[in-house]
Image: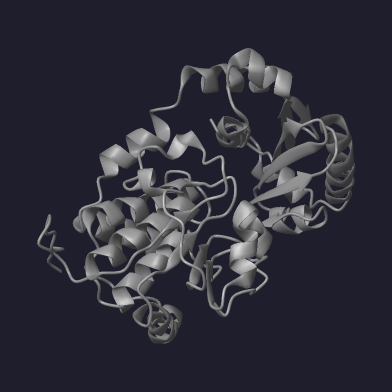
Length: 357
């Protein structure tokens, strides 16, 4: 793979794309091949997977003469400043009638401000890895075994045999690094690790991406996390760990709501725990809830009970109610589930949790 700018040739043969992606790739390419402009849309409250996927598509297609506006419902979280091409987000409006690619979104409403653009588009290519995806696209590339949506975008670009520039490779590497929690989450697969290694071969900068993702947070974020950790609640023998952050707490720490998103990973570090839940007050009658689970609770199924969604081990909810009401509503369901689990538990489970010397 060579380019007139910054050629990077892998030293080993790239793994073939997933068969499911290879099968759909020609049909999706027809969507691109017929038009000069393709619109890439992220989900609202954009994270590294949705932004990295959209930017990678743009950075790969533009050298071959395609224009790719990247749209993300504002405000775009500042935490992703380090992604190559981030400055192009929301800088260009697409002409009417252009095909839309939407990334990492379980349904069209996740596009936020740009939902009408998605629902009114003549062609929608829906690329996602959520088990709760509503298959709302004209073409649906949805594979739930992928660690990130960016993995599927990478497979798609390989199936099309396109040169992947270093900036696009870095964006795709960021999708995998962020959605696997730095290769710590249960979704860290051989395929994800292989894709990450290939992307480094293609010019991704793992040092810059890791530094941007894990070592460039503002001090206000640490102050906010301190407030959350100080007020944590532990129930069911530490199987449930939950906390919350109010708008007042955010103001006092100088942090923004999007900075609270990463705090859930701190809650999900207790040995023997089953659920970590973080409640974030967005407004007087809007609360966002992040859920992380371990073995026995399906986070996506729990979130779906309240209109949310996600993955088996990581999910989210938006509730149109005050913070305290949201806490009471979700925790009542969680406590019932954990109580039932405790009553039906195998006594041998306790033996497995005896601390080792």
